[in-house]
Image (cartoon, rainbow, N blue to C red):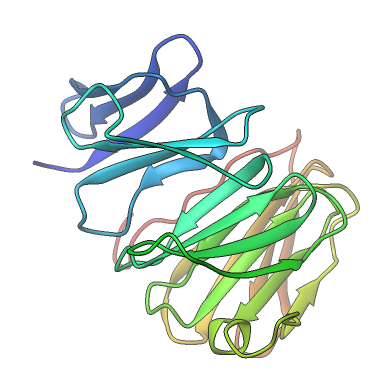
Length: 223
């Protein structure tokens, strides 16, 4: 199977489209997902997840199956969700601003802490699993060392960026290794900003003609 783009539609669920041919290759029903609340479970599990909008529920599908293979309840409504690359950890961002971490194999809640003052808009886990990036409607972007998350009951971010004046709608990790990476953030304030993970320094700010609601980073060497 080639590269597939996933898109969520309230009427039709989650649709998988072949990136090169444009052909519809998969449909996942019973999905009314949040904008940053659906995607693959890890990098190679063969499963898709979705947080249900306006409900404290999430569903999981095996690739190729239209109906969910798992339906689960959540402690509160989640507005964002992400998995570690190996699929072992699930990170949920809540409408309250809290972040939850579950162990996928057991379903055990490992950690929960108040990370933001308003709803979490997106979560990203670095490819090597060393840090977590959270964005929020409170206009902040936080970066957490995952080693600290599992030691401290109330972990503090090692970077907290507050350059946006309105809610942050999307984040993306530009290609890199370890802490030598760049975070891009977009906001309702009509700007896109770049931040250096290693130093915490702001690198770039660009004004846009309208509010930006999504970001994607091309792979290393991509056009």
